[in-house]
Image 1 (cartoon, helix red, strand yellow):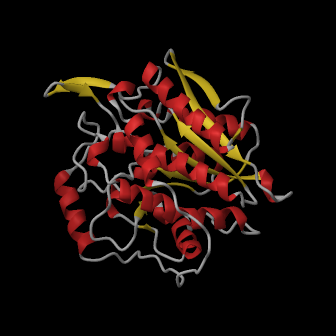
Image 2 (spheres, one colour; image 1 turned 180 degrees about the vertical axis):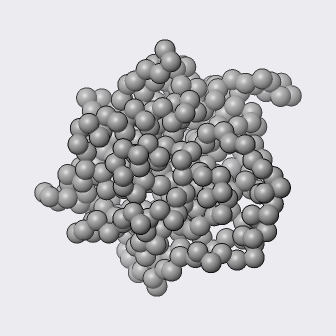
Image 3 (spheres, rainbow, N blue to C red; image 1 turned 120 degrees about the vertical axis):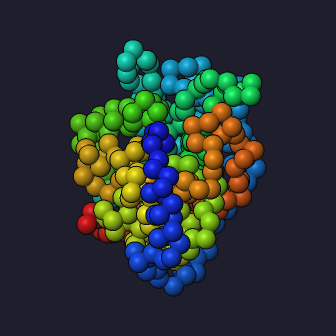
Length: 325
């Protein structure tokens, strides 16, 4: 997540209001009975999280050897899982301020002759801020929650959705680079896909999902909640309240601070981010102590499994039901 300045007195007031109740609650349908196997392996989640946020990758800064190692790991998993290349390879290359960067892009082609030309993008940034000023001898900003956690979610979703193989619309998986440089990777690929006349239905972005929220009746909040019916329809599809409204997300305009926003600008479609970082439940944002051991892997597994039914329903409805307000 790009760095923001917090007004803590304002935050305290907002949290108090939030604790007293939220009038913008989401109405959900009764739980849907399904035989869909959404189970993922917690060991796989933990293994990839540990690798991406290891000291060996030195904080995955764009243009460094560490992010190259992360990219190779992701590409290997995509290839092994049967996730196709969208471009000539899994990489979408760009240059920003003299730095060579690349997004990692895979896809699952839809199985419906008409709907396969419509795309859903699942995204997360896999870069972080690299080596920083040492604190107690530690200078590597490992970026476990920000955003190895979101990266793991997208990779695991790619594996599971390839295994299920039941999507009428095509699904694209994008791991963005240079998010920490001002959403540059997302800006570059959004512009490229717009030039290619991609028919983008929605973009669902994953940002900082490594720790659970406290005292909420939903699993994660959706940035830009009020901009579309995304949360309402997604919860209906899921049969439970997966997505909710967080006042702080609106107050700090988080809708514009992650990789969903360039796609909203280019395509004018629902392009929004799920997160479980609520400014009170994790103290290591952009800090060298943002390490895998501080995250809740069981919670991450739950988030990933919980979004699968909604994503598949999005991919299979005859019409585009999720729309901007």
